[in-house]
Length: 474
Image 1 (cartoon, one colour):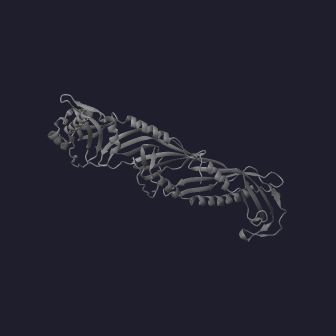
Image 2: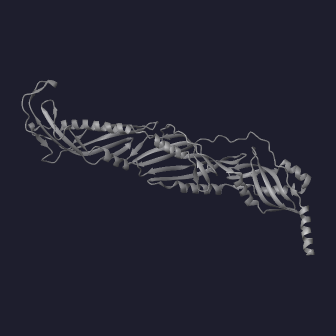
């Protein structure tokens, strides 16, 4: 027990000899250092839409049977001396497209019945002077005569999201003549003229229906999504913050509609989810076809995470002052911003003495090496004055030199990991029937901002992204 008591007294004595080093916290002078406005990012995505679903809708909605008024009980009287009735039945639609023109063609067949009589006079004053001849028909006892007809449609979207469509009925092209019994007359031109009038009326109805469409609500939904924070794996949260929307003119070929959709935005990546701000979708501002993206992103990092990275490298590191027979062991490193170009580095240590010391350093980025480095590491003036008075041995360049060895952070592994994660997320099926294909080609740090509350890495990323829509619901 006697030896144990002596050992405890020895520990107490040694502890009393080890001073607690606690200098005042630094106060760096504020400078005119601030975060510059984030440059606008341009994101342009070629969009390819499979038109077959639209073709199927058209097949269901385009009228299949055209008939004269009153068919099959009433005749149309033409110029007093001719009466007729008809019924036209179309076949499947044949749809082709090129540029902003879509052609709707189909082959149809028709039945016509009619009779004639003798009239005298002219114009609206013509009067009949004979009864009607027996009714003759075409397409009842023999195969129905066939005719090719169709529409040509011009499609556009205005900057206010209204659809601008013009439907033009094409001249019907008869494949068979229709010769009825009255005087063996070929009345095909009469039937074709009447049929075109019906097509013009039907086309106008379709045109009015399409021109009443406005896609602003759908684009507002998309705009709201773009304003919503999205989690990027374990990297943080991305908020695009869009400001402008653009869309190229429609360009169709065969069964595909091609369009370039783009936004100008100021994206932000943060470690914590930010508040979503909803805005009204602006009018479309540009109709030029583009592709590719050049994105400027402010990656906001808190100093706690940076402190952990530095502590992982330095914790347990022993620094010996051989000539003095003293040493310190680094326990923890904390980084702080100070509204200054420099950072404050707090070193917690134990050893010959224990406590904390404050240093300052200026973070710089070397783009040629893709390295973030803290330069000009030195004792803060308050720590310097305190050490000179209380523990001068700690005011030693060896500590600075040792810290300099761990003051460089190569960003290549970080950017490579980020590119791989983003590329994995950019490719594949986004949702049913919608596929993305793209590649982030590069990401480069262009500036750094050691603000008081956060450390901001401003990056620029370049690449391409395309979207293919194979199926959708209207």
